Image 1: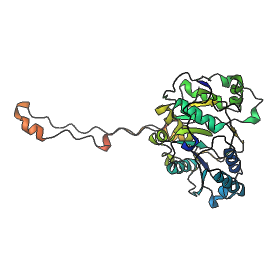
Image 2: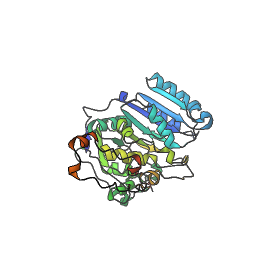
Image 3: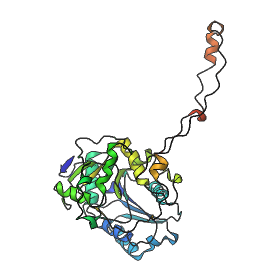
Image 4: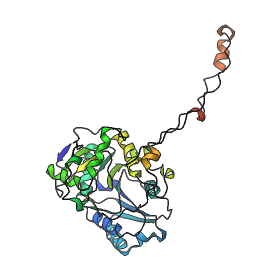
Length: 335
């Protein structure tokens, strides 16, 4: 779907809270917050949860200074010390539990947004009313590295956004290639969208998932489990955003937007030693084995020996016990 003018039903900024997990002083959080200050559409609130010892990220004088200006502009900024050291999935779970707005922007702490980014996401969400609308982060150091093969899975959305089940091994999974390097920039240029256009100018396309900057219907995210699977991951778990988005997409649909106005600062990852892939731990893990069948009940007496009165007094059959329920499905992996 392509829009050329603002939606009459754009999600207002007052219905959006930005959730930013962080875990250390990399110097990027202040940049990310400054970009939020420059948005044409401001959110109602920004919640930052800092897992580092001593809350070094939120104690940064730059972060404190930008926070004062955001608050002056009417944005409720909450800088939260949360030294759980349990990993980013637990940090996202913590933030989601604090959120109250109808929509949440899941934003990484090393993303720089252009001025129209949040307004464009809100306009598209208002028009499409799906589970999630994302802007894949670009890596502009690769802007001269055009990869035509990565453009192949690109597919515009035509009409309403429908729920879709995407898993490894099916063709839709190959859409992950769209978000390599600076491919979003090249696709945007091919579509005549370069960024800076009015918020009502965008093209929606089909995704596998979107990293770094995703506007999500909070109710759908919570209903599909959010990040409650975090105990399955270690502090070095990764791919939690993939799992959450795949579940949201399966329930209510999800799209990406062109132009992408979310840019990675391209610092080294905050999780240099990755141990547990959330997809493998949650989506791809085998279901628990079924419980053994109960022994056969003794044969019932002949129908002529049972009165209607005694049959009624027996009541309905008892529901199966917990041991007879099938194992809970686990979620797929990101690689």
